Amino acid sequence: MRDTDSLSPAQVDKIRRQLVSALASPAITHGLARTFRAALKEIELYKNHWTSRRQYPHGVTDLATSRIQIGGGNHRIAGFLNIDLVPPADLIWDVREGIPLADGTAEFVFSEHFLEHIDYPRSAKLFAREVHRILAPEGQVVTGVPDARFVLRGYLNGDQELFAEMLSRWYANRDCLDDFNTYLDLVNYVFRDQDDSAKYSPHYWAYDYDKLVNLFIEARFSRVEPWTFDPAIANPKRAWGSLYVIATK
Ligand SMILES: C[S@@+](CC[C@H](N)C(=O)[O-])C[C@H]1O[C@@H](n2cnc3c(N)ncnc32)[C@H](O)[C@@H]1O
Image 1 (cartoon, rainbow, N blue to C red):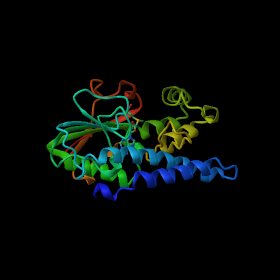
Image 2 (image 1 turned 30 degrees about the horizontal axis):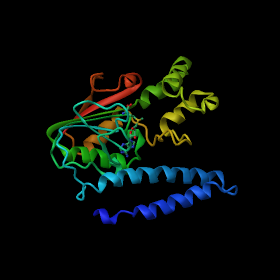
Image 3 (image 1 turned 180 degrees about the vertical axis):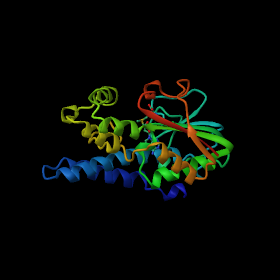
Image 4 (image 1 turned 30 degrees about the vertical axis):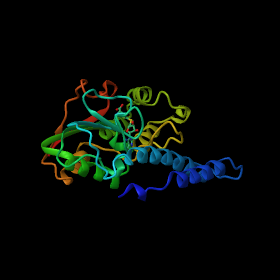
């Protein structure tokens, strides 16, 4: 795709202004308002993405790096190229559009609590294929996600202590906690967090070990194994309740 194929900033701003104006209308319905808020969020991400994308007309950056973190947010890792939709990344990029690095140039890719934030199957499978493409032979990717089996085991066991701990660790800052009355509310959040707030990005899909193995093997990785949590790389607050795998090209 050429950068001239992008929607022009003027076009995007026009749509944004129309959405903002419609949201201010007293006639707007709840459903339409939710959809427009989500669209406004995507417009911001689109603008961020294309601000970077225009610097790289062929969609491939010239950034020399062999260690990459994707979706690190504020958890930047020194010595890595940190790619994310939003600052403070080294490269602002929407990974649903691919990974802007040349084939076989990376040695190691790391991502945690990112995969569940992109849609499955289209974007999650593209992510796995793109990581495989940019890795050198024997290169590795570590992926961490909220552990769906851990959450469901607690639900089936009626584990109220686990419920309380998850709420306080994962959702203490949300303004919707008054509505978290049962363990199933928590399961819903972990599997399909659709908080109607600009602050939080939704969860689109839940993963267990088998699903991660399946995702990476389908993308032609040769093996996938459990990864032992290493706080030198991973965000220490993810040590609890997460599942990590390491896939080798
Ligand atoms: C829940 S945060 C996790 C941040 C960090 N990895 C951690 O564990 O603390 C999810 C991160 O993924 C990023 N993200 C979500 N969708 C993305 C996309 N399509 N492309 C790049 N980054 C994305 C978000 O901006 C956010 O920083």
